[in-house]
Length: 168
Length: 168
Image (cartoon, rainbow over all chains, first blue to last red; front, side, top):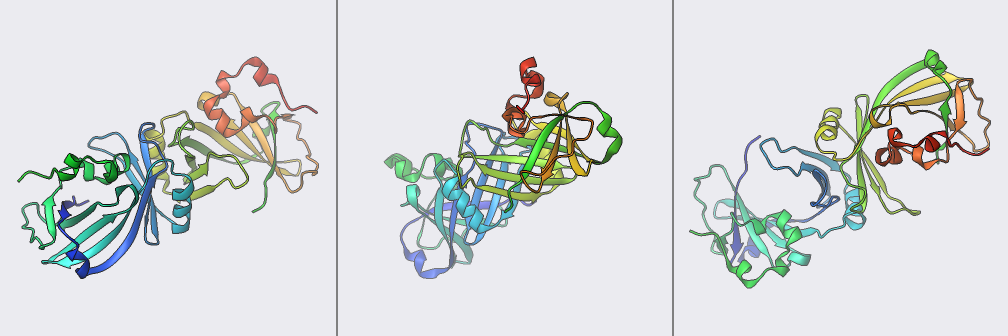
């Protein structure tokens, strides 16, 4: 399986909204508690597509992962009633700009206020053509990972956490 | 959905083995810890068929349950590596005797020594024709439920727990 090369950035302003091609609502939550057990069981709803994802909590080379499509109505019921912890909810926008397809995630709920733009590259050294609305890079900051946004959502971040970005 | 009417019995001896029509290996374990969260996530492997079952831990009228078929090889991997707690493992035998189809479960591992026979009925007041190998009824004893056999397996039972049966 190919490794994904992705870079993640903040956005400077709302100008990307003028070039949105499509958008979809995302919601994800966990049936398991990360502090217990050997696996996480995640539900993800993307528009009317849903998946159940099971992942080993042990980090290492052979980290196991399983994914099964399930009916969206059932995923929604489980997210509403069976997921004890916080959830990540966002609108993902697809934005064609500067020769790239950008995924701009506008978070909702406990992460509202946070907007990040991701681009997938074919090679690590590929040049990124930055649209004028693109802000500083945050690729290497773990607090922007989805799993981190569940335990430490954006609305709880300090000013320092909001302002610090990748070096260089 | 029809309600299942089942009665469960111990067996007196091994005579049922002479009339076994078919048997299948069953194994089940949980990805979740029953003490945490709002749902249990169970893996069940029956021969080469496997299912993932998600059930609300809240008891009540509208107890939610979801079941998805998954590949047997993946269920086996998850049972081997991702289920932290004890598992229930048994051979289920199908036995045609006295006009009924009996399911005789011979447990393995921590529940070895336990053999129970179940019969499914069409009506609650239906007469059960008891084969000569059938022992006393245990339908109403919760410690014989599969979920109980995980937390309090047969090999840990006291003599009193092994000997007490349904009244009447």
